[in-house]
Length: 131
Image (cartoon, rainbow, N blue to C red; front, top):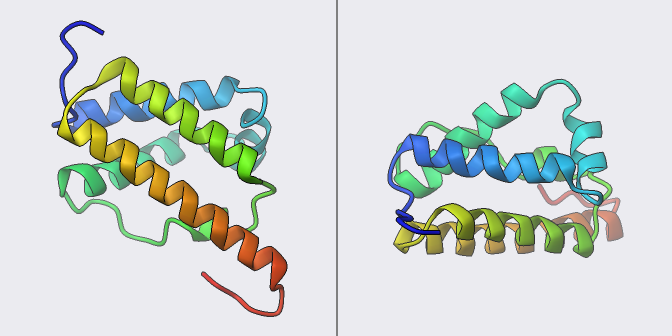
């Protein structure tokens, strides 16, 4: 934890994403969901996540798309989002500190909350689509 710095450049984004998804891929609860969905496309997924977080945290607009759509039908519940957030926050705490690190944690929390509620809405209202 010594000499931690803030998230300030693409290399930091890559470290954050790679470290986080390394945890996800080994997690008893999350690994089956992610590995089933992503299968052998991990390199492409990681590249997309670099662009997403680069856009969100650094303001370099390299990500275009709708982040919710690929998640809309995932077989996940609140426990999955709670674990996702725990691993994400652990990753931030291990590698970074500062304003952007706090922003990353806040944005991840809001994203998890929104995705969870939208997935629940879609499940409970199959005749309506909220995407």
